[in-house]
Image (cartoon, rainbow, N blue to C red; front, side, top):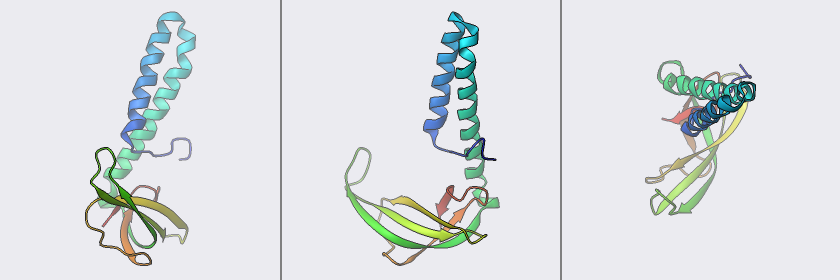
Length: 133
């Protein structure tokens, strides 16, 4: 379903609520002007809810795959971050053989090395929604 791409990030839901609030304000000035804002708000909330559903379904619908670590970038500090943390770049093939690339953060000790493997559980409809096993 390409019309509503899944995005479980909470910022998408918050932005949808804010746009809906602006739609409510626009309703008081001119009801027709609020229609695009309400439509955008509904679309953003649908994207969030679909992504959240997929994220929560990883345990029962997820497919396990082994990915290859292509690069590890060390980072230092940041707001709400520990002193040392890493961004791990990986690539993996899904159940259809399509290559996917992505990243994830690791804040504790780094158990992986460049060129090593990592086990991922991803949603078959949207491989960008995953968790590290």
